[in-house]
Image 1 (cartoon, one colour):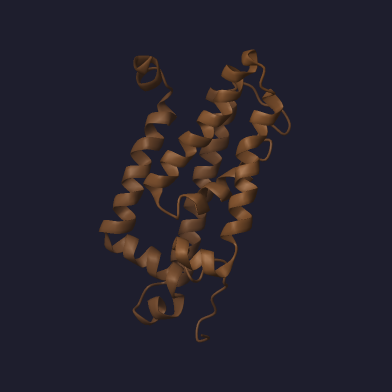
Image 2 (cartoon, one colour):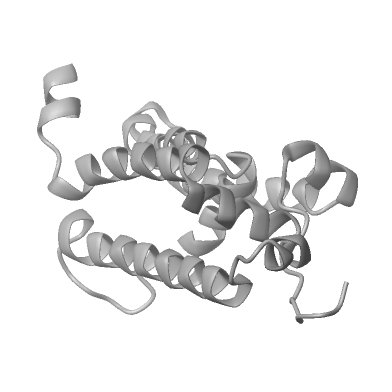
Length: 175
């Protein structure tokens, strides 16, 4: 059972594991990571220390978009080797919930992603036992909605470790 799970996956599965470890290392052990995290916490202070806030934010958004595109490519090339309209079926919202669930930590995001994927795969295993596949298919989305509802409260956001400047536009010279 473990041989199939661990050694019969496509390249992107192994790349995702390595990428989570690499991104954790970059975010928490390098100067670049300190800059990225400081821009998320207090862009004005980061700017005063010489960090280009605009460039850092744009590069992070571009990297996030590239990774989302890679996920979409994996979905249509390896997961279900065909392209159909609406094939993502709202999985982007699951990723937003997963980000909050993981407390903005790459290694927790990796574990959460495989947890969500396991719940999605579980629907096919439990269907012969009489469980509704539609209900099981909804579980990741329900969990994402609950996480989003709870995670958007300001006190919860601070407790979860959300970046203080998350979603706040930055204009140089304003505080």
